[in-house]
Length: 168
Image (cartoon, rainbow, N blue to C red; front, side, top):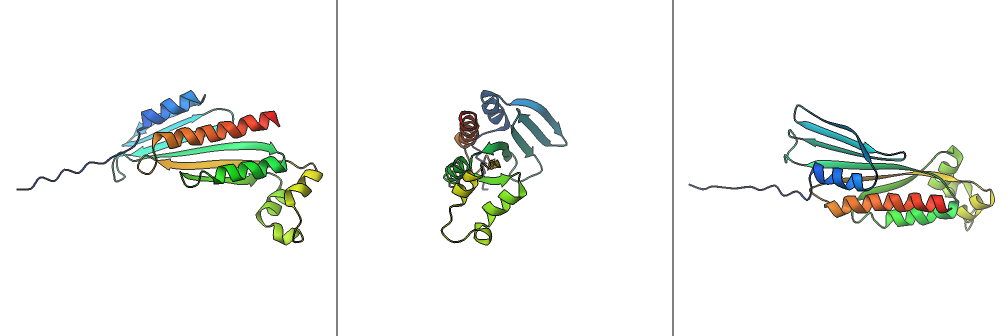
């Protein structure tokens, strides 16, 4: 007779993330479990953190976390710096930083080669026009690939970006 024990190892649970969110001033707006699926939504004015855990998903105990935030009105150079900062975290967790708002600016940022001659500094040009760039940041994590420190880092990153906006 063989006994095979299989242990699912997870780096955090829903309660751990709720505690971290609370430290960053996110208030629980929704916390409900129905038919084996738990959903938690915590937010403040600009940041939203959503969790989902389903007992039907395998491995049971897997928690998915999505952090979303809006970063309004960045000066062009700040946008460029912040995008580089966010991109530096891509090796730690799934994170994206995308432009939002003015359609013309978004198109310029996505495909500057279509609108500017070679060698033209897009951010310098936008700065001369006194344009601001809105952005959204999204981080996707789960308790299998990531640890609680990754959740902390994603929230610290957003907090840092928001503080820079206030000081701009």
